[in-house]
Length: 122
Image (cartoon, rainbow, N blue to C red; front, side, top):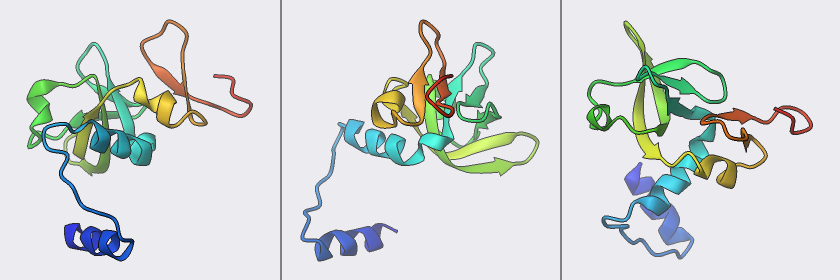
């Protein structure tokens, strides 16, 4: 995939540059693209997909399993004994309504977010 991306960027005349230790731009891009697969940690340590309420767990092979981020986005689910999120990144929850305002709305005073339904009512 990396080779394909590099070729596409070269064809478009865009430069390739590492983000180094500042991964915020990359994580924001992942958030914008994977927002339907955003999940928030609950007090019991489980994660629930914000859009569907589906319970997921961080895959045991992930480095994030020890960090237990507040919010994640993932691109793959693997079902074994549990529903595991793989290929994931930690994100800031406030990015969701900022980057995807038509889909997410912050609940006033609540720690969760809910998808916007119909006319924008939650």
